[in-house]
Length: 95
Length: 335
Image (cartoon, rainbow over all chains, first blue to last red):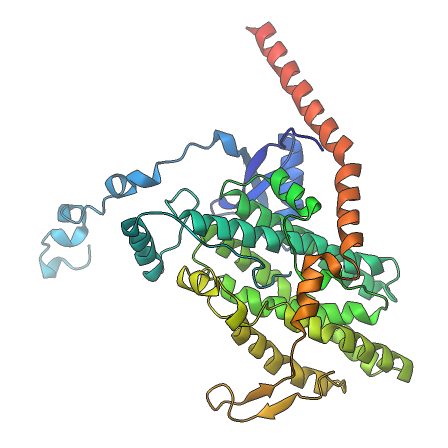
């Protein structure tokens, strides 16, 4: 058995033009070409998309989940960020 | 696509009560747990084992059907079987990748399967001697798996739930092609009818065992329900499967191999359901622990595939490394 690990790649698929690529899962492959091929075989057997991105999992930099509450504070006190904070006369209509 | 009640779960954990309570509150609020979130060691361990077993079941599950691809009676049946077996390989890979987010490596999982440390669904340790077995597997084994898997789409662990959504979408064709195949045989010549009945006789009880031990004997079931790794008990799912499947058998004129099977209008809170005979759990444990007719064959086939592929993996890695070095040299030369 080989002890050398096959690199892990994250797979992103665009379901059709006009939409974003979305994370679908991961795949093991020795290089980018193999990764694309494996991603196609594993994640697009039923018209799931028309474009694939693969990126080495080790190249992804992620935010710290422990800091999620401070990083992604809902900012409930910053009401001025919302359109309803501002008074517009009714006569002006929809804005 | 195949799952089975978790075999040999050990969901013990040793964290502070505050931590466990906070985690439980997240679960109770139906928040999904994502890979980098803090989680009890027992939760992680249970999921690694369950997703691993599930993935292994998909991979080993390719073998009993792969056995018949070259001998499918028509091109239509052959295409369906090929597509189904390919799906199972894909499902195994989705699941391995979900398990890997918890910090276990693919190599480690493969080694545990081959060494016998990790289990897979006991159903694949039964042989497939006739073509009707392809029908019985699709109809019953995939049918039982769907019962198990649909609630797993709402599992508290995000990557597992997402993999299950993908799997369930692809699964329904597996069961339908199996039932159609059985139906064709059951409506065919007397010999074909006999072949279908024989397959049902052999697969019915092992399919019921796929839901795992009875709730009263399933020690860790409670904790897994609390953590919302599973949503229904083994016995509830088994009952649902029986109630759904018995009329399907009747419809194509096949007889369930259970003399105690009887409609009971009182069951399921008055909605009615089938009473059924005693399941032979000693057979289940014997097969899980390696004593089934095909255990050795299945692991031998997986080991052979892994070993025969070793040079390919090695060559692919060497090729990638060589290309990387070449690219670096040409970059340096250009600078």
